[in-house]
Image 1 (cartoon, rainbow, N blue to C red):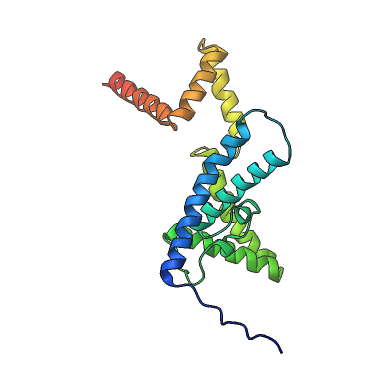
Image 2: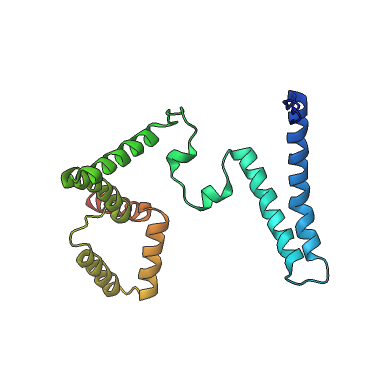
Length: 195
């Protein structure tokens, strides 16, 4: 005849909270104590040191998972953004984020459907943005020739290569306002000469 087992008792809310607080404090303690113990002499790489490093990683992962809701290994492993977002939270904070999500959805649909036209349309927008960032107000066609002419003109005026390079760096640093200020000054001086 078998002995009847006693029914298992569920922990109370108070016991569960105390357990969580104890685990949290133990993880914090391990996060600092384990590396300190591993750093004490004699320093050698043995089972003891490896277990201390493992406990440090485990406690750090526990604390990260407790605060962020996901493991460090998921983040390092490159899990998808959809997996990290809480289920049911479909709202995005900004219009830019919604537009980016729309672009990504179009690209995903284009890849799955094999529709090259939709993919080229979304990439065309990105190329325009990239070209705007790279070229600025400069026209992409013939920019090398224009730059070479500007350099030849500067060399003819008596500037050295270091002056040309410093002017180009200053132009980039001031986002082109340096050239705009020079053009405004030239226009004003020409206007003064005419009067």
